[in-house]
Amino acid sequence: MTRKIAQLKMVSLAFLLALTTSGLASSAQGQPTAEHQALATEVGVWDAETKFWMAPDTPPMASKATETNTILGGMWLISEFKGDMGGMPFLGRGQFGYDPVAKKYIGTWIDSMSPYLSIMEGSMDESNKKLTMLSKGRDARTGEESLTKMVTTYIDEDHKTFEMFSLVEGEEDQWWKVMEIDYTRQK
Image 1 (cartoon, helix red, strand yellow):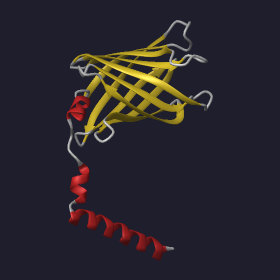
Image 2 (cartoon, helix red, strand yellow):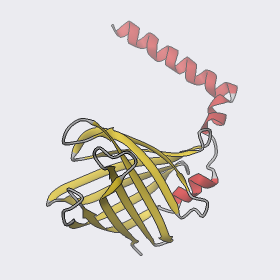
Image 3 (cartoon, helix red, strand yellow):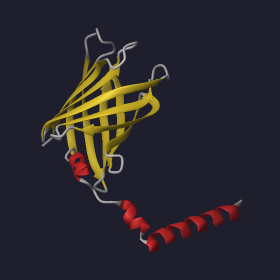
Image 4 (tube, one colour):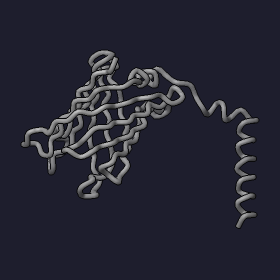
């Protein structure tokens, strides 16, 4: 068994060496685009005021949270969201970027209230003020596949609003608001 592991390590090392010497590794890294730079404007610590609706006809639950965003390699926005949801501690993490081949913003999301990964993609409007993404994942309560729509509106460099919508059951292309978060960048 140890011999097979050593052989696998040698093959992996040889592959990495071949990539490096051929120049493929450096060209595969890419360069940040204007779309990546748009995401980088979110770097910082944000205070968040959250409203969450359990059903379309119920009053929202409110809470406060903090979102901390960093940038990785100029291309990946790494986000950590800490707060509470319905009186329970909540921690969420996301990775967001831009795929220059598909010409789509992309991302993933995990949090402390769901065992499922959400995968998202979307686009920015022409004014760079509204990012709309669709997220595919599973409903944490039922385990069924779900689709959500998320819209981030950039008000100015220190304020943004995030809205999340779920499909109305039995209605195609009809959405109801599940969450709204108003953000203010900490100074």
